[in-house]
Length: 444
Image (cartoon, rainbow, N blue to C red):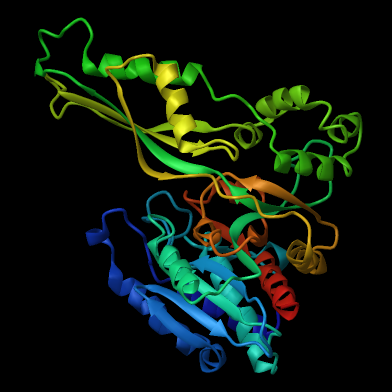
């Protein structure tokens, strides 16, 4: 590792040690930690802060790097808030930013190492280095860094609104999302760079049953909790129908061309074999099953406040990820039909529709694919529907080419540590991520 690489890594570790944890209860958020993060940036990246214009929107940040001539700008996005973590159960403290191993196997352990300070700091490193060498983009480049993506995304929403008010329509927006992965698609041995061209809608659906309370020694035949439990099991027994969208088909065709064995014949005939593929995707894994349908997961339950009292209100929250091509209204209607009980109130909370689909061809797609290919020449670049939600969805009103891609090679184990214990990233992987952003910026 060169001296420059070591210095970049230490800057990354410095920012990872600042516990910028998002909390749904805003009053519980440690805002001084967010202020420390923002104050640290000019100290760590002086050339960037001398060359770029800066604005602060609450705790979110917007930078403008003026280009050499007029033209539609590019926006690189990331967020610096992280989900909460304590030391309990972690191999290394979540905000210790500790290093283990060496060479290609050196790991950096920290909350936010991937989600999403990894991308944010990689962007900063790429811009800082390019400014120092005297590079200036052809067209404007904006850096949009949100502070509350893990909760409500108000920062990114505000920045998108500000750009809209100024009449700015970016040519390309890139936010976190897919990654460079291996062995996720049967028959394909090459690395796969999955680029989100859209993302599912996300809605918390609240199921509520209200009933007279009383002493638990004399319960009615059907309590509120029983009625709620019955509604949950009915919903679980009636999953949403599987569908293959145009993006799904494009992904299967793209990857199928690189498959080996008998599956190649199936995947390259995706359009004619859609019924078979819906069954295959439904059985391969949880990830493939989620790709082709709206999903529901009961994440919260609430009943009585006392062990010996009947609940007057029983409530469940169903985290619902709405497939592209569907809608919030269609989702609620399916849930009501599945439950078949008018005594269970069904309502959407914080509803968000699926995002429009960005093109998987054309100059902006080609520009991103070329940047990925410059660093990962063996990777097959393919569109996909992002299963989670990102700040990028707030920019679809001002840009037709919004992509979700995190430029890191991530194993299944590393992806599984997101929002969980032992989040970590290979240092070499992070450095290659900087190279992808650098290639993209040079093409701006």
